[in-house]
Length: 473
Image (cartoon, rainbow, N blue to C red):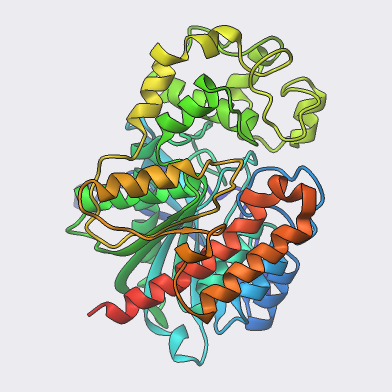
């Protein structure tokens, strides 16, 4: 029997969660609920039996990468996920966790995460289970909640590929989303998002360890898609640099992420190659960097054309439909691919584009690029060579950067069968992706990043993690 509970209103101020202690001088002090990674509140969002997991996946319609749909999809994410994930092996409890973390300025804040815990008779579903820390893709939706597997296709897919096959999954919603106390989102702020992810992991594992049944094995995997690819890599870097005494990364697999942010920004802005979704990504990024570092502009009109300058800074994330934002002249009109960044009717001013090379914005992109670090745990990269949203150059640059320091990582390009692992499983994944792309026809670019590539990469990543599990002591 499926049980569902409302997840709204979970984020509470830390002071409000403290329990006053009576009894005078002998009373114990209240717990420090502002400490990073403190578990503040837990609720059960859903319990899904195996057949319900399969049904949730089959009913998924919408982007896994979370950018808005721009045309009807011929093949839904549910189709590809069902084909590549296989039938659920485990039932899954989905829990919603509220935890204490820090905003980019070091101030206490609360955030929320989904925790997916497998159960069942199979040996894969109980006992010591590997943990997957998962970072989600960009979304304009402020109420985005990875604990709502029935209305969040990305969450349903992660559940089907990983939790339903024996992984304990921790999926933070990020600061600024899902009931967080922060009013804005630190988009692509590598250090801040890593702090948020690690705190969500701490709090979630503290809860899981009290449950019995499936327990964390100590094997930690990290993955994420799109924005989440950047977040996953930043989190891997931060754990090995700062928290190696607490966590050991077994393997990581960032997917379709903007790892070389400054190179990506140069391509979009200096080379005038706006990407699909760019008019949504730019306000998120500029607001993030303005509030984190300052200096992006004196007033929004320095960066945004009229009338967009009046609302851009606080525009996203929001629960107002993107179509309404367009109708209200808060985003450019006649722009079905959300790529009208520059030129007449575009989002950004000519001065913003012309002054980009020496700007504080480009410096912030450089600060948050992920080139130059050396992972200790194995890493695999995955994406699609024709990606019009997050250009595949990011993955190529990352692979080459690792190689320059002697770290060889696989880079799976869904357009190049020879780049994928050998064997029938990868043959089937490649064939399913190519067929789905063919069926999309001329609409394929609009669905490529958010709907076609993710299930194929998840399938490859699950196989990669399985190999790492087999090699682990």
